[in-house]
Picture 1 (cartoon, rainbow, N blue to C red):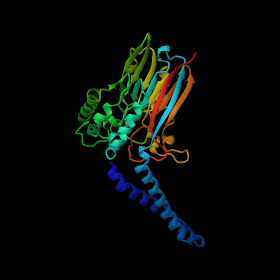
Picture 2 (cartoon, rainbow, N blue to C red):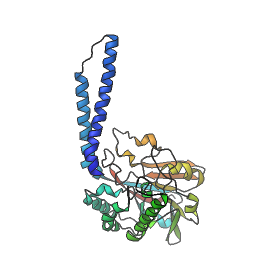
Picture 3 (cartoon, rainbow, N blue to C red):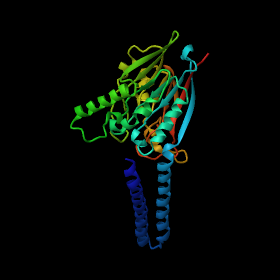
Picture 4 (cartoon, rainbow, N blue to C red):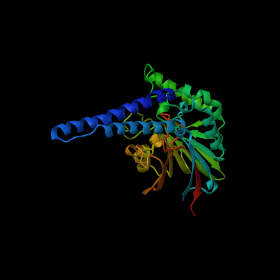
Length: 336
């Protein structure tokens, strides 16, 4: 993926910019002939060249530097329902590894994992998209990922890419789902992660409980690309007690089902990558996702409910501009 990007993306972008500017020039030239005014080609030519050069500089920065910049964002999450035994409990939230991102820079993944461990997490929550295309992406990084440690382990869910829906070499859906099960088995047995597929796990401290719920990817909006909706929230909630934290890859699930149907205080998701580009405070992700990065809270009939959208550690296209890879450290706090 990275090599194709290096070779094709600058060429395609240059062609698009050149064609766009010359299309506008052509329209202006026709208007000048119809309405008898003069127009010079020179400023249009230099505008086209300038746009191409600037775009290439931005792409080069995003590829060589931007995709490996890292932010550690700290959030103190205060809620009246946080049990006393979990006051100060530290959840490290990561998402969207897309491990092929690191094929050409494996040391960057090691640095990211070291940064996760440096937060001394009680629990690591991974909200999906371990891979982009298939399990083979993950295998070279098994030993690195196994080094990620927390007192209560790593809990994870599957994202849309983990359902391998962007591959075209499966004979049928049965073959695809068999490959998904192989990936799930890898995550459980090789990495030692607790993969939650429409289920939950209880963490008990003293007399208090924290319940982590996890659902398969559940996209709830038309995002302009193929996705899947396999999450079953009712199954994930079965037997859930104590303070609840939901892991769901796609943040659209929060408004569509979590808010109207549950009283879950904290939901963690990823998926958006914040479009991997943010220029002067604007990101294309804001056009597709009402909640696209950071912490969101609403107060409704079920009390205060919050969503945190992590912008991911990996890339679907290998460049980040203005959107650094993210590790989120969430410290639970009770409210007296």
